[in-house]
Length: 304
Image 1: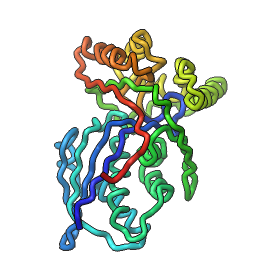
Image 2 (image 1 turned 45 degrees about the vertical axis):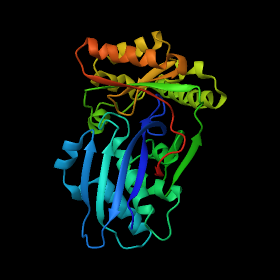
Image 3 (image 1 turned 90 degrees about the vertical axis):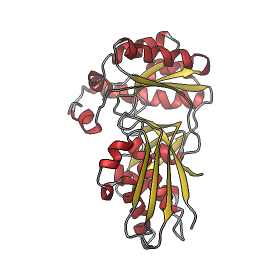
Image 4 (image 1 turned 60 degrees about the horizontal axis):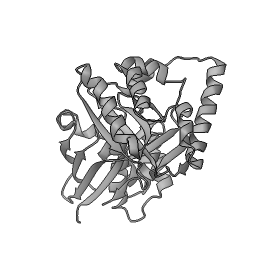
C-alpha cells in the first residue's frame, strides 16, 4: 500500500481562563507519514525537525505515534499493521504548543486510514483524551478552531467554535523548558471562592466574545486565576512580555498550555509588531527565542 501522510496543527491550550477545557488550533503543523510493510513485526521511525535528536534517543516502543496506532487497530478489532513512520516536527516540542498531542492525533489518523471501518472523529477523540489525560489539546488538534471539551468516563463532550478571521496570534517561544508535570506541580490545591467565580466569568466572556466578534473584551477575558499566576514564575520576564504585547497593540496575552510559549491575541494590522516586541524582551535578556505570526487552523488534522 502507498504511504499515508497526515498533518496535525499546533494547539494552544487553556486560552487564559479555560484551564484543561479550552484549546485553540493554530496554522503550524507537524507532519507524520506511515508506509506499511507486511514483513515488519514492529514500527520503525525516522525523525526530522525540532527535537529529532531527543526522539531518536527514546525507546521506540514507547513512542506515542505507534501507541496511538495500536489503539485504533484494537478499537477497530483489526490486526496491527506495522511499518515505517516518519515524523517531521515543525512545532517546537515541550513548549506548550501541543507537540505530544500531534503525535497522538497523527498516529490515530494514520491507523484510521488503514482500517476497513474507520472510526469517527468522536471515537478518535475518546482515545486521544484517554491517552493525553485531558482534551484541551487533542480536541482542537482533531477538529480545528476553538474547542470547549470535557472528558467523561466513556466519552468526550466537545463543541467547536469558529475563530473570527480577523483574530491573529503573535507567538514567542523562548529557549526555556517547562515540563507539563512540573508546571502542574506548582499549582495550588485551593484557590479563593471569589477567584474561582471570576475565572468562570472570564471563560464565559472569552467564548462569547469570540462568537460575537467583540474582541476588545479579550483584554479582560484572557485574565486567569487558576494557573497563570503560578506558572508565570517559571518563565523569565513573563509579565514584561505580556505588557509589551498590549502596548504594541494586542488585546491581551497569556501562557500557551503549560508554557514556556507565550501567545498574544491581536488583529492582523498589529500582529507582526506585537510578535517582534515580545521576542525583543527575551533577546534583550539574552534568551534565544522564535517568534511566529499565526492564524487559527480551521480544519484540524487531515490526510494530505
